[in-house]
Length: 155
Image (cartoon, rainbow, N blue to C red):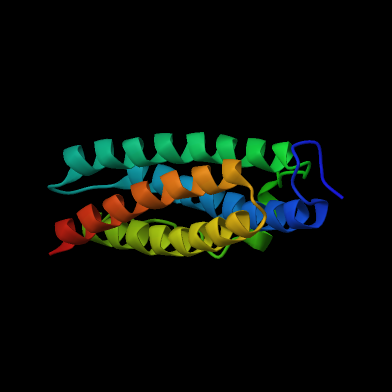
């Protein structure tokens, strides 16, 4: 049996579950980025303050897109901090003021996120869910480029 958009209901439910895990990760990632933006100190302050803002602005857009995709699949997006903390593989970072340490945290967070995006992409292909596949494909391309750039920054 298919849902309103023609996706098998069981597969849509599995995709919604995996998207909720990604949503939780993005929410923790967003908060980490806000904390880094607010608390960064040192010589790289100006460039990293702006870069962290760019990253959190992107993350908040993705949070909304992921939640709306879950709804499109007829699921219910997680929406409490308790849910996010219980379902995220990203840990909340606190009191980070060093730019290099902040970049390393972002690299680790992106590495966690990209693995989930790849898993969801595979599931979406299996479910013939072009909408989710397209979203994940775009996210993966962006994440790969960002990880390359951040890795270059750390060298």
